[in-house]
Image (cartoon, rainbow, N blue to C red):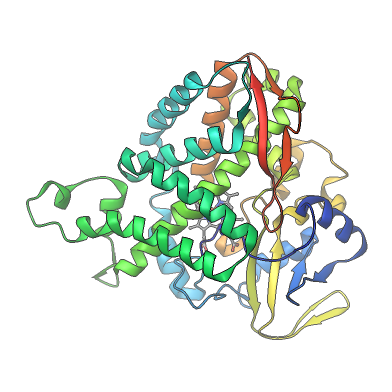
Length: 384
Ligand code: HEM
C-alpha cells in the first residue's frame, strides 16, 4: 500500500464523483459498505488532515514510510524525503522530462484514436520517474504491466490480488536496491550518483536505511504515483478536448498559469480519491460521534467539489488555488507536489506544441473508472 494506493471506500456505484456529489448534498459524512466513516465536506476533510493527533496515519500493519507514520518518527523520515523533492533537487531533471514528453508526443499517430491514460499518461509517468530515479529503461514493460495489474487489483479490492501486486512491485524495487546496497567499494555502482543510489546511502540516527525502509520509500515515490499521474493526464486530456478555448490559451500561457489551470482541472475531477486515518479518541463531526479506533476516509474528490467553497462546477484557477486539496493538507501533504505538477505541465505543454487540435474520438470516448478509483479508465482522443 502506498500514499497513493486506492483503498476501498465506496462500492457498487458507477462513478465516485457523481456519487459523492449526491451524497454531499444530503450528508456531511457517511458510512460506507465496510461500515467505515467517509468525510465528504471540505471543512471536515481539511480539519481531519490537519489534526494528526486525533486522526492517526498508522492505518496498516505494513511499514509505510512516511505515510503510515505519526509524530516524531514521521517528521524524521519526511525531512529526509523532502530533500529529494525541492525545486533545487528536481530542476536538473527538467530537461529529461521535456525530452521524454517531446519524444512521446512526436511518436503519437495523428488522426487515429489514442487512449490517453495508458498510451500517454502511463508511458510518460513510467519514463519520467525512471529517468528521475536512475532506473534502467529496460524496466519499462514490467512497470507498465504493473500499473495495469495494480489498477485491476484496486478495482476488484481483492486482498489476495492486492497483496500480489504489492509483492510484485517490491520485487522490482529490490532488484534495483540490492545491487546498490551490496556494491563493493570501488565498483561503479558503489559511487553511483543517481537518486536511488543516493537514497541507499542515506542514514537515520546514524544507521543506513534498512532494505524494508528503502523499498517502502521508493514504493511511495513510484507505485502509486505512476497511476496518479496517468489518471491526471486522462482527466486533463478529457477537459482540453471538451474545452478547446482553454487548450488554445494554455498553448501560449506561462508556466505558472499552466500549472494553476491544471490544478483547477484536477480539482474539479480529482482522480486520487481518498486517504485513510484511524481515530485515536472520540471525535465529533456534526451530530455524529466517531468512536476511537474507527477507520475514517478523507475524501479529497468530494471535498474538492464542495459547493460551499467552490460554487457549482465553477472554473476559477487563481481564486480556488488556496482551497485546492488535490495534494492533501497538513503534515502528510504530498511532498511530491512540485514533481507531479512539473511533470503534468511538461507533458501538457509538449502535447499542445505537437498538435493543433485535440478532439474526443467518436464512439465511447470517455469511460469512467469504477470506485474506488476516480477519473477515467479510458479517454479516447484524436490528435491533429
Ligand atoms: C498527480 C500526482 C499526485 C497526487 C494527486 C498526489 C496526492 C497526494 C495526497 C492527497 C497525499 C496526502 C496523503 C495523506 O494525507 O494521507 C499524498 C502524499 C504523498 N505523496 Fe503524493 N501525489 C501525487 C504525486 C506524488 C509524487 C510524484 C510523489 C513522489 C515522487 C509523491 C509522494 C508522496 C508521499 C511520499 C506522500 C506521503 C507523505 C506523508 O505521509 O508525509 N506524490 N500525495
